[in-house]
Amino acid sequence: MEIRVKCGCGEEGCSEWTIVELQGVVETQSSFQGSVQNLEIGRLCHSDSSQESYTFTVGYHELTGSKVTLKKPLLVLKKLQKCTDGSSEKETELQVVGIIRSKILFKTRPKPLFSGITSLFCSCLLL
Image (tube, rainbow, N blue to C red; front, side, top):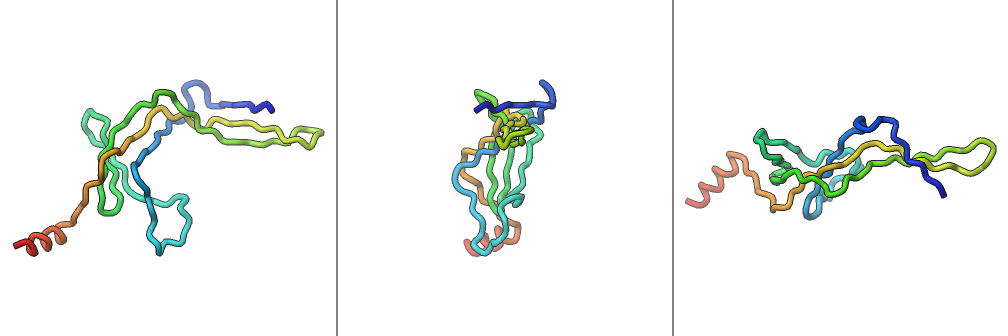
């Protein structure tokens, strides 16, 4: 079977994607009944320093990570099936949507975040 790979955006025109790699499992609350697709799970921020460091805040946890270049780039593909004229066979074609050259790696344990009221309450309990 022949599968064609088609890129209509040109050599430098493909959109750049990045993988976010987390260690562990991201779980929803048991009361959540909706779809996980398009679910906002946290906030990803880029630091202003010259290093490629990022922070990812999920609920009351903050992760610190860095941008790593992949050894081999990956393609993001979309599978298209077209009917050929005069026959019942479908022709499969792969369209290039983007290219992934880097990933943001979070490999350390998350730091707990506390609000001002909670930390004040905890310090009062310790006295």
